[in-house]
Amino acid sequence: MIPKGYTGLTLFPFIFLKHRKLLKDVILLNHERIHLKQQLEMLVLPFYMFYVSEFLIRLGYYQNWKKAYRNISFEREAYTNQSNLEYLKVRPFWAFLKYLRNHDI
Image (cartoon, rainbow, N blue to C red):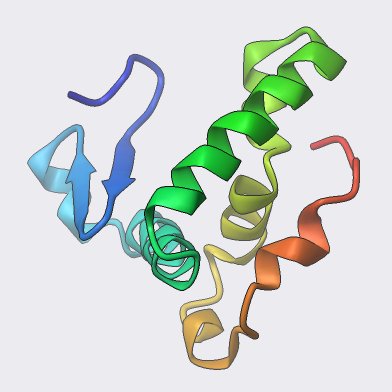
């Protein structure tokens, strides 16, 4: 179920992991929990529509799958804050908007 090259996937309300041992990876789990929060605050379905649209736009811009994926605003927020285990306690509503601008990762 997890695409090649990825270790986790979040489809509200579930987090899917490539391997059972990843249940102990608190950074990965925090990253995926950030996605759960994003999905919930966007009422789930609009999140996926926005995510795919933004990915396609960035893919056209970067012409590189990995670079397009890493620069999706939702991913930028999650990667930037995944090590901060307190982030979800203080995260502002729709915080991903701050990551919409083009800044290569």
